[in-house]
Length: 318
Image (tube, rainbow, N blue to C red; front, side):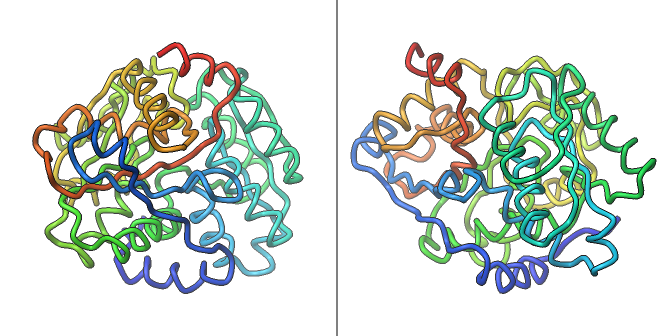
């Protein structure tokens, strides 16, 4: 399985220029004052599916020939990877099957259906749905799009960091949420080329620390998945992102689910931004080490804004 390079990100940037406009990057005085630093937010919640993953889905499906597209695609996800693949499949006219957990976010499930994909709700958690999707791919011949170990996805989502670093090349650190690790791996590749002094820091829920513990220990390890934060909910690490993160990631932080909820509220009240849990995880990570970056310019990736009504109620209570 290949490992993408910055050249792959650059090629994806050219491809996506005709498919997705750049998303905005802003900093906000109230949030800056609270953190004690100039905090630039990369607003991937502004994507057409409300999340950064769409960059990867379009990059992958664009590389398929007509026969591959006709055979279709299948993917498993808590929601944003699902929307990405469904969106790309609709754009390129490919049949699409999505497997999501039984308790899937209704907003994300509705989006998948609206995009024309066949949706199956199977499995208690993402890791269970992943097994079902892989089996469907084997049985039907549809291309199984792994949410982490797919180099084209890393190249695609890495373009978000390219856009950010072109706007703010002098950031001291870039905080990125980690579920599968594609976003952090792509950001690390972009920073190594465009801003080598920028520290790329991954952030994951302490209630699902598989990627963090694998990075710390230098080998892939499974961990219990007890998080309620959908976009970082996985019990198993992914080999390709881990290879990149081990080489290029400066640090990797764990934050509690409760701290992520607080960060969501902070984004809502201080930055006019409705973020889902994974979209606020990067800010939660920055908040946990804010003293280290006092007075500096830093950035966070707001990876998505697909919060359910139940999630928003939890945020307002945080």
